[in-house]
Image 1 (cartoon, rainbow, N blue to C red):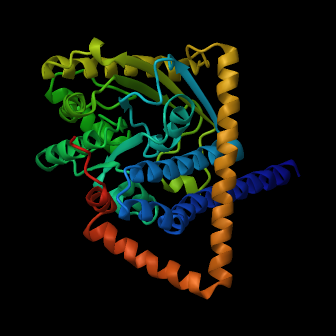
Image 2 (cartoon, rainbow, N blue to C red):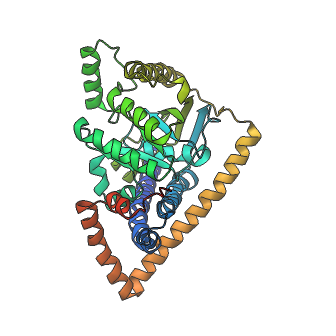
Image 3 (tube, one colour):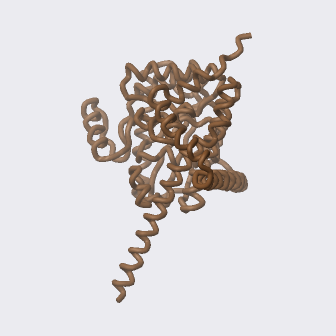
Length: 384
């Protein structure tokens, strides 16, 4: 009898996890498509009128969607975010290069929680592989938000990085760019390749991180110093002390991590050897060696705290302000999605416009790219 009750409870928990995962994934996917299309009259008008604030308008709308996702996994699904280290140097207005170990394919999604608290979701840009730019809804929005998409082929990526960062310079815009020096997420195949790379270059083998590829990192640092007045490098170590969400399909099954720990270290650019690529390469390699040692001890003892440089009262104030922002974003995007569904069902003219907009977005995304389109529509800076 006890076995039957136990199996019944296990079945109910499994069904609950699947339902939760399906709802979360559907909310992410559908809200991105609906928001991108329904809100297009706002940001497209700004771009067509060549307003200087056009990119700011889109990035602000995008940041509320990021906050909506944080609200979904923190407030609705109870994911506990622990942030330790020293975050006091993080700033909403500073130009930052954020480097993080790539434990799973969705580390960037959970990193939004750190930016929402201590930096800027509006300024956040992410370096991603080029294939992701064509995902309906999410990919279109990431294009328009000027995320950096790379082919992982240096000859083409080098020109893309220069063009990308110089564009922000023309906008006098200080990006906060999230970059994964490992190049791919930590799994058996990439782990084996990292081991072969270590053997080839006479490096120590790692069990918890992949060896960083230094060429892209040194190029980003150099060009961000040249074009964007890089202020700091934020070194983030992510760890999952309980369950791990390795890939996107885990979202559907509801295998959302219960606890995620971020350890943050900030380095003012003046303290980093940026004038010599060789020294800079060794600097990032040293940071990864420290990450490996830290994670080895972390997964041994599973010990973490929330000491982050702020006092308890300051952290409580930050959490209160964040909760208001998250709830506001959750309400806004939930209402937008429900209204869109209502209009699609009861207003034929809206349904026709919406359905026609989808293939138009696919064509623009594939042929031109929303990032290139919005760059063309962005007004040139005043020269006087």
